[in-house]
Length: 85
Image (cartoon, rainbow, N blue to C red; front, side):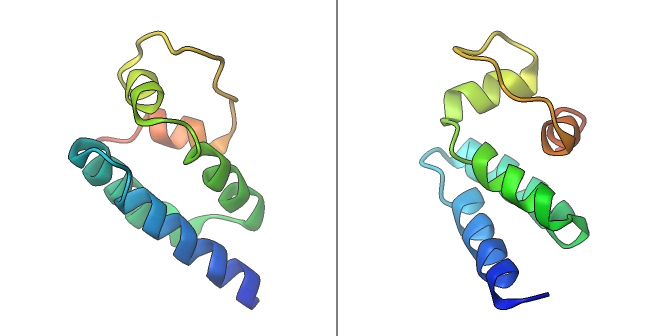
């Protein structure tokens, strides 16, 4: 694993734990902690993009409610949708 992957992982870990709402800090922090070391580079890139989505839409997506826009289907969204906190 090169330094770019390690930097990306550090960025993802930080962003998952400092969201703005405590609920999403805990949910995304635990999700990332569980999966980050098992993800391939492509999935890490998708996770980085996923973390750019605002807390309200991520929470609604997780709970199965409507979101303001279509969230891309990929390995990350599937893992998140099936994640048990």
